[in-house]
Amino acid sequence: MAKLTEIDTAAIPGGRGHLRLLQRDDEFSIRIAGKPGELMNSRLHGSEDALAELACTRVADRAPIRVLVGGLGMGFTLAAALKSLPDHAEVVVAELVPGVVDWNRGPLGSAAGHPINDPRCRILIEDVVTVLEQSPGEFDAIMLDVDNGPEGLTRKDNDRLYNAQGLETIQRALTNDGVVAIWSAGMDPAFSERLKRAGLCVEEHTVRAHRPGKGARHTIWLGW
Image (cartoon, rainbow, N blue to C red; front, side, top):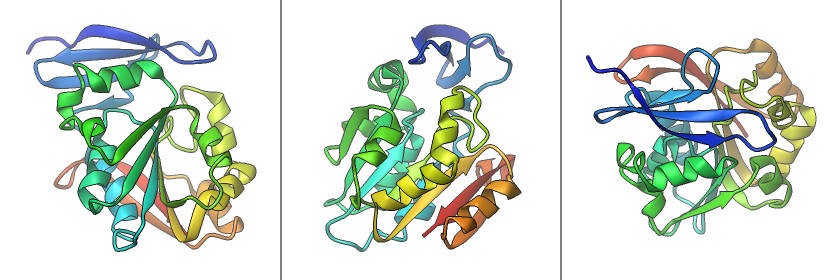
């Protein structure tokens, strides 16, 4: 089998290193330069799909409807959200790394079916925390696939999204009866308790990286 070949790099804002985009035929991988393993792979996106499906199916019958995806990644969560929502929905995507947006407009876009070209989609090259702070009561659903989940991997600053103050910011950005879905690479009982202490009703879902029922087990929390 041919090796994955690096086709581009993208700087992480704040001088926090670089992301690497690798390709082998129609398979793509995103990794952090200088660190082992990979952040995501285009063949293993079952849990990214589930993140959107779990959140959007709860609000899909609303009109109007506006949702936020925190972290564009390879575009799979965005694609699943668009598939789960009606034609009148607006899907806002906050992506911190400009290069990731460029990849989705270029070589990586075909992996998820070019979802950023959907007219319902609006891309913001911005820290998702900033978007949340500036959007009180605006989103029916918020889907967060930022870093590695509550246990930060690429940016220690992501802790401010998942601490008590960050959870308050998320709640303020939701509409009445809005829902937040948070992706994590693994289980985190302490974070489950933090969500409950923030006053949220919580469901914890274990989903597989590759469907049906294969690949690593990831965690998605739903809070409302």
